Image (cartoon, rainbow, N blue to C red; front, side, top):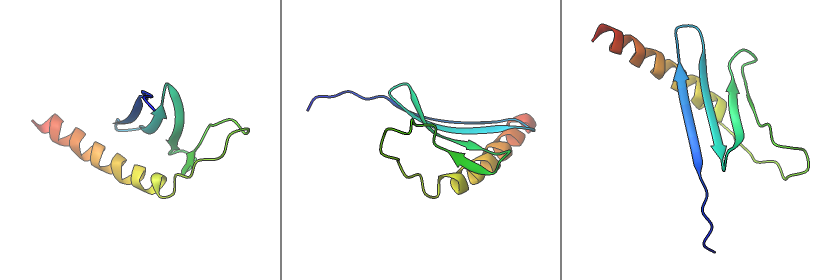
Length: 76
């Protein structure tokens, strides 16, 4: 099967917010909701659910690293 797919993983932060999102073929598969302290899978109910075990915990770590890198960049 010669199918082409496009995936994306975006991590971003500021002093006050952050984001961590996974997508496939221009569709959002999962994102971290840091206000609710949980991961969100916004797929429609008619598809088989995709498991993202451990992704929220990793997103919290990614947010810490992003903010540390932001501080280092500011000092530079």
